[in-house]
Every structure is written in C-alpha cells, then in structure tokens.
Image (cartoon, rainbow, N blue to C red):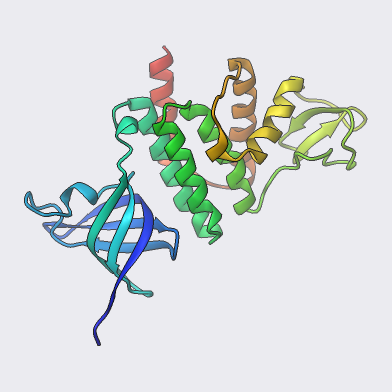
Length: 249
C-alpha cells in the first residue's frame, strides 16, 4: 500500500542521533501533536535534510506519516530557524528549557493550544523580548494543561475577589486580607502582573517593561509552585539557573 506524503506544521523539541547517519526528531505538530520522525541520512554532509534536522526549528514538514510508530521525513519548508536565539547564550538556555518543559506538558494534555503558545513564545524571544519574562508567561499558562492552575481570579480560601493581599503556594493561589495568616506579602503590582501574564495574548505583546523586583517575586512563586504541584524535574532548568547566575555575576 502506497503511503501519501503529508504536510504538517511543527517545532522540533529534541533530536537524537540514530544509526551512523540519521536522527530521530521529536516534533510538536499543529495537526497531530507530538510525533516521532526519522530523518534518514541527515548527518551526511551532502544531505538536504542536514540543516533542518535539529531542535529549535519551526517549519512545514513533508513526511510519510505513521500514526503508531516513526514517521519518515522527506523535506522541510523552513519557517523560522530562530537564528537570533541561537546567537545568544542566555536566549538559547531559555528556549532549550521551554522545549523540554513543553515536551512534558504535551504528555499531560494534547491541546492544540500548546503548539500555538510555544510558537508565539519562541517568536517573541527571537524578536528580542526578554526570555525571562516570556518564559514566566508560558510557565504560568502551562499550569492549566498540567491540571494545577493556581487561582488568580479570587481568594482561593474564601472566594472573595476583593482586597487580594498576596499569592501563596501553600494556599494554591491568591489570598485576601481576611484569610491571610502568615507568609510573604507580594507587591500590589505583582498581583496585577500575574493576571496579565496568564490572560495576555503573546502574539499581541508589543512592549514589556517590568521592574526586576516584581519579576523576582513572580519567578519565585512559579518556581515554588512548580516544585510543589507538578513533580517535574528538568535538567535544562538547572542548566538555565547556572547560566543566568553566571551572566549576572
């Protein structure tokens, strides 16, 4: 039975060497979610697939699609090589972390929205927007698909949407003045920024200027929340922390 060539839009999340000259690509596609694709002979110097068989690449992939098993790569129409990300160590580190995080998130939810979120995030980082901020936005949005979204609409303890004082990992989200007992109180603007991060359309972001102290509070909450509720341990996250600490020192 002859198999027809299909075209899918996808982002390569990871690539692994296979045999002496090939690679297996894990591609998050718009049409089929996460699929495995073998790029035969792509490591040969003269292969037409050599430059497009790598992670952090967005394109239109021409494949022999196989639902249960490895599909076969025929060719790629490059849409975005993310060249500006690749030219900056910090941006590469954040992008690599997002690819690994997305790979874990898509295993918990097959929503088509995840593909769009990742594509939008990588596009913004490539356009020069803060990878730190874009990563925090995606981390917050991804909690929905991991099934552990914090309550950022009202107090998670009493349901009131008035006099929100802080956000607390232990409490699972916002805490109002009446329910607050102890713990760190974040700044008012941090409360507003968290809601903005969650509800913002990434494609429509044209400018981001946020004080470091507010970003620190948001990032601290997200790190603590991920550790408590997701159970994810990502090697790229540890590497990201080392690189950012080195760059800032």
